[in-house]
Picture (cartoon, rainbow, N blue to C red):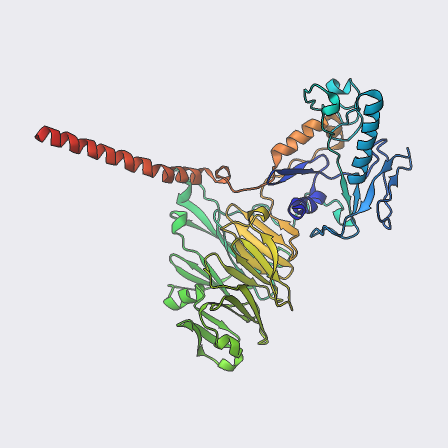
Length: 524
């Protein structure tokens, strides 16, 4: 649970603007986070935790002497992307101490003073109406018969780490609008660690009929490992988006783009068009994983086994040639070969360019291969997407370990998997593009939603804290599911038409039955 809740805060926290608050949600739990300097809650003086502090030693304020609970992040809860030297401020120990003091004060005076939910400052009776003197927030007071029966106010706690240094929100490496497509793209890794994307960009309505699906763009782009654009091609095509059969494959120095009108061969380095031909059956077989050229041989699936069409069969390991129930063969970056088979379990054989074999058991029982996808990076990182779970194996490892699990980790049915040298990519419909480390830490998010405008210190000082919180909440909420509200207007209209066809068919059937009954009655 903490792995999922803290994944986006650890990634987005350094990129937040001053005063910006975001929220993530997991099931019924909600976590709000923002970027803040370490300061004393009593006098707002800066705090400097000792990097060698350990245990539960409290941190004292040098200005007013106030005590703050301080400890290292517990090693029993390892979080991907959070270093072992991270420090927690103001959580369990301080909450327990405040609870004990409130209980003692309530026993002596009959009531415990409330605290501000935003900055945890003590509130007097006048602050319940006018707002907090420190941050200006107006607390929500629950009408109950006894103040002593009210639940304690939530305590804000901080995670301090050198990795959470502020990052400018305008220092984005990726160009704006680059990850913008209608449907999940086709991806193919390159031998040098980059990858190629083929997708349909969002359509533009025509002047005559104003239909979004009439005109759209087919985008093919190659990215470097650091997400710099190597080349970009945009072609305007017409016709419904669903009829545009797209396919993509990489054959070393050549990239083959498949479409409804044929295939086009591009240069992997420059993106220049080399040739255009009608798509043959052999090309379609290579696209769907029934043929492949790797390790200097041309192989084909023949009755569930690998048959060598051209080349020396000694280049392939004997275990791969004897494998039964072969379902797919694909060329891997660098010239290796990947073989997916189903016989006494689902197995993946990865043969590197030197001929070394690694075998992974994906499912110990014979099962369906629907929705299964695998990808291997140029350096040997293996990633498998199966039953909406992503499992990875680093170079040299012989077993797959769980990286992402289901919709809670934003793995959808239409997710497209790509293995990179430093982790895995997930692409999906609606311009979704994210990169994760092998341990599940979020490394990159396309962030297609617009960021709030940067405000100066004077504007932030005049704006109440509650207004800043409400504005940030409206800007971005934690994404928990892909609902109908996320679909474009044309897709929502198409979904509504598909949902209404049973009612129309029933009305048509009732009308024909009524006419038939009237005709029989008149004839009688």
